[in-house]
Image (cartoon, rainbow, N blue to C red; front, side, top):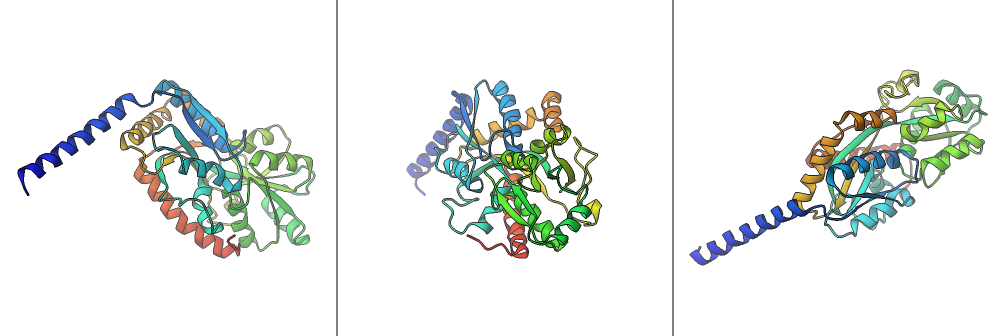
Length: 323
């Protein structure tokens, strides 16, 4: 290799390093848009606003929350996939991100190739609640009610193929019951119809359901995680009520478009990990039924790849036909 070629390689490496340092020093310089794939008031929205406020205070710019519900989170997700990879358009991704590949054949993006995982923000179980009009106070009650009325009991979630939908479908198969799924554009509309008695049951995140349960407007009968929720320890798990081993957790994490500059990824990751350790931020998450998570981009990417494979097996078990 000639001296000239070596000199060019060294020069290019130096320029790349300088560019990385420049990005790290100047980012962020304007407001950052955070897309939420569900309606206001849901778990993703609540957690997004908590971390957005904390990051805004730490990074000195406003995090603008942009709710874009619908299409099983794919509307918001597609916007981010096609955004300029500069760190100013982020996605509050949810566990539904790893389910969609098994539910929808034609998608405008690839869940791994077209995104840059940054950090897992929080984890929480899904919660199952019923209308006060329903003769149900527990999971055994619900199973008995469903078996006495096969194919007549409906339940709502934030959309077809969402994390909450698949958690209920997995439970349906294990319990050997027939249910009718009613998809909404977010958990809050499903909660509203459960309160009104239009649907019997709702499955959504703890942060979304918690205020309605505490206000006595719906009746919580279970959480889907292996352990009870720290914010609502009085609500038993599905596993405790006759289905040992049942464990479905709902994660939320920040992603950006593919090819996001490493310096930007590192900055956001560091700030999130620092923010969720602050007592006041941690308390907000826990109060709303979520557990702060954190970690590295690599850990987040590994979770996404692993869950895509795991949910593919669950979809096969439930008999749901990909669309």
